[in-house]
Length: 59
Image 1: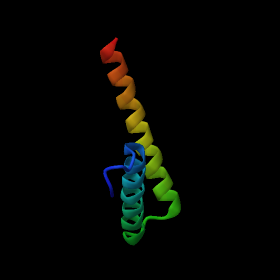
Image 2 (image 1 turned 90 degrees about the vertical axis):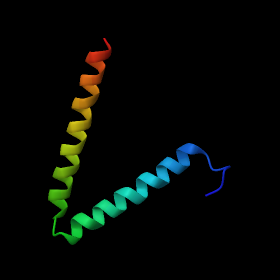
Image 3 (image 1 turned 90 degrees about the horizontal axis):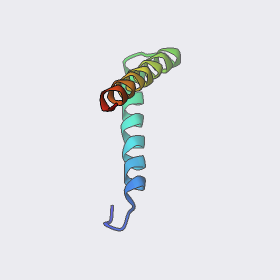
Image 4 (image 1 turned 135 degrees about the vertical axis):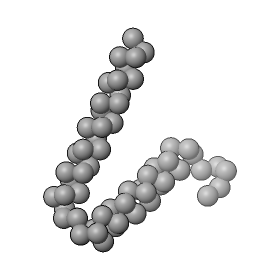
């Protein structure tokens, strides 16, 4: 990593590393593809709820 690397690229790379690591961990613990998709959906639902709550609080 150099100081000239744009921040969005650094964040995208970090996100890819974290996601890949999390995926490998889930697979190693025996999660099926369907279970990983269900977990991903649950995570997205939680983020969506949090955004809605933040939006209401800001209003």
